[in-house]
Length: 320
Length: 146
Ligand SMILES: Nc1nc2c(ncn2[C@@H]2O[C@H](COP(=O)(O)OP(=O)(O)OP(=O)(O)O)[C@@H](O)[C@H]2O)c(=O)[nH]1
Ligand SMILES: [Mg+2]
Image 1 (cartoon, rainbow over the protein chains, first blue to last red):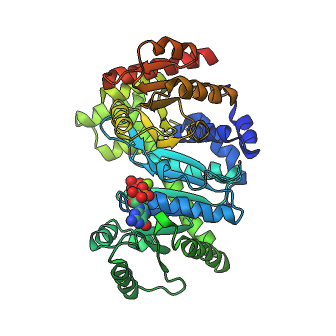
Image 2 (image 1 turned 135 degrees about the vertical axis):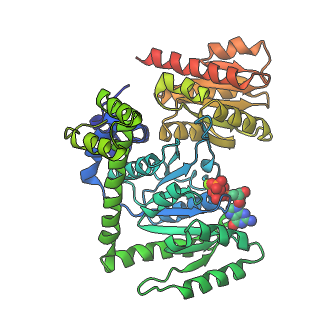
Image 3 (image 1 turned 135 degrees about the horizontal axis):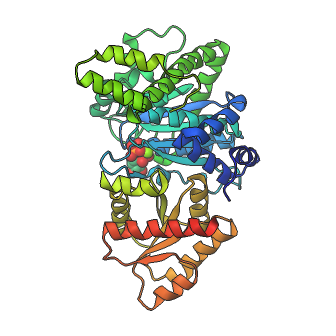
């Protein structure tokens, strides 16, 4: 029952979804096992198209993701979906409800339906982005392509998650409130493709115009984000949306900007790992760290000096 | 915060439960209440909602690496649906407990337990009771496996 990461990985590559599920839990929990999984997966990553989908709560992200997954499957893709939702800061619990809207591919032949994983933010500030990136890597390494990541576009953390995608779809719906919200969260600037979802409702044309105006203000030398009107519930416009998503990937490949994007991401990810480790030094302090903090409290040395001392005394390869 | 600790003591991570209604079984009010209860005692609830099949629940349990399956049953189908779920998981080698909530006549409870259902929760159970019951069921299932 309790299988080793290497064994799990082999099984997962062979299409064992339970093994993939278990591997994802290991990376999500982090620690030594998570590091080991990341190490095993690493050489096989980089092939998948990672598509981030974000937007205000209830705008129709999950329904859109479901339909896009169906379009990708029709083209022969081995789709994985990662749906990220916030945990309750009070209890640590979460209701992960995105799967409710992800039923359209259920009739797909066995093995062709998307692999869907729900992930809670678990209150770790930088940890979510790391856990989500780790999960994307595992899904990539075991052979999924494309990988669609859904996050609610409200917090910085969620923005970070989609920002790590190759192609970012920002969903808005008719009515100003949405666009203003998205703008505030800095989402509009992230978009490679816009979906004006719920186009069956009045105001879709206005929403498109607002977005066009906003794009006119910016500078888009080589890729101006296309705007697609969709009605996810009926599947309308989703094929066009998916086509734009795929064109964006081609564009990245043709202009050799995929490497640049991923390069920026790599630096960011290393920064986060460092951050986590440093957080760990304080959250689970050694006797030395405790002592230094006492000395700062008693006014014996400045905090900056204590920090310097802690950093200098970190043995290499120590993973707190 | 106490709830959170309470879950982590056992597992060092929140317990994950797949929550569903099988077949044609009315509205989703009850199951939504249960979902919130479980969230409030620190569970990660993978909510599937209405009209699921044993196969969709199994698929979700595998992909989500769930610790338990919760079925909400109000249509009187518990004697067929719940054992079918237990068997589907067993045949797939997924050793996680199935907990049934909803309206189950007292005489049927021992029969369900005999069929391999881990626990049956009545409509009056408190959040703490529901959480504690599922937690014990998960613990027992893990002890079985090891
Ligand atoms: N009228 C209309 N309703 C839609 C459309 N797309 C989605 N909905 C509905 O909007 C509601 C929310 O859809 P979801 O797909 O769950 O939205 P979401 O953005 O994933 O929601 P969160 O994950 O909770 O933020 C559901 O009731 C959908 O049926 C659409 O194109 N038109
Ligand atoms: Mg959603």
